[in-house]
Structures are given as C-alpha cells and as structure tokens.
Image 1: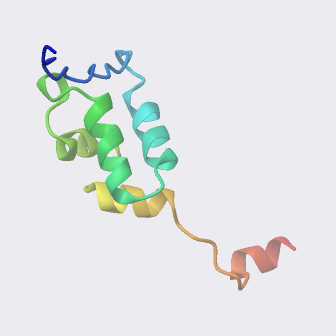
Image 2: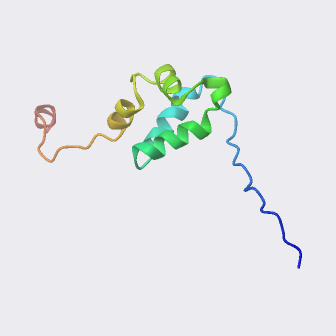
Image 3: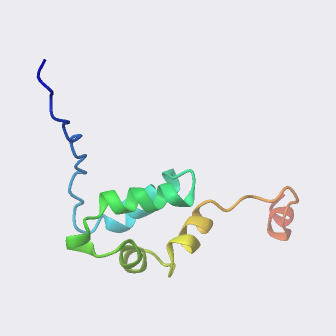
Length: 91
C-alpha cells in the first residue's frame, strides 16, 4: 500500500475590493464579526497586506477610529435599557 502525501488545503482567495469601496467593506466586515478576533481575521483575509498594509493600517486609513478595538466597540455598542434624554424628548 502506497503512502499518500498530505495535501495542503486550498487557499481561500477573497475577491478584489473596488477602489472607493474600502470604507464600506471595512464597516461591513466589522459589523458582521461576532467578536474582536473574528473582525481581525475578516480584515486580514479581505485586505491583502502587500496592497493595504497591516490590519492596523487598514483600520486607520479607512475608519474614523484609530484602532480596531475602538471601531469594533463602536459598531457593536449595546443600547442601554434606560431611555436616554434624547429618546425621552422624541417620545
């Protein structure tokens, strides 16, 4: 019986991101992530390092936030159970 060499898993290639759409794509990836690590993975896979740089550089370039943690927290901000003053005025 011949021994079969292990095959490398096929690499997942993300489609190229159109110029001008980077901000929208970044926001969508951060919003879709369940946790911080997933957001980092999504960005790392979607934005090639050779083209865009590190994840930190991508976030700083295409987001209003300085760090991925701040962008993630802003996208996943939880609503408080108590209505705010602004919500009280609207009602």
